Image 1 (spheres, rainbow, N blue to C red):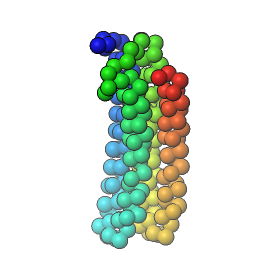
Image 2 (cartoon, rainbow, N blue to C red):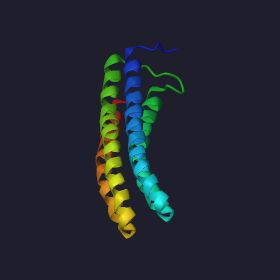
Image 3 (cartoon, one colour):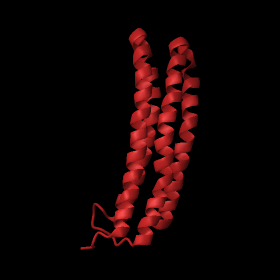
Length: 158
């Protein structure tokens, strides 16, 4: 059995941050849109589907973080038998998780605010739902960059 040392602890911290920060950001973002959407759906229940689509968008950052966390978990053998992880490698894994953790954690609430504004657009002009989605999706781009950076960095470390 491999002893759990500093390296594995650092790698686990990286995975935890990659999951926790974007997950928290996604919860905040979806709450923001949900609050805006509930008022519109009260007055116009037929707009629920469009609103739900906007509410789902900030949740994707949580998925990106979870994916990154799984990559670390699988790469270090946390589920299938621990692999030796030195302190330097553990620190590198921690740093590799930071792009998705930070980008996802910050972009999800921002995307929620943009999507909530999109809900207001749909309330007055439902035919403009495509524009509302595009506005919110633009914020998503930066979370995708964070995910890509973390995956590439982890690929070099694991």
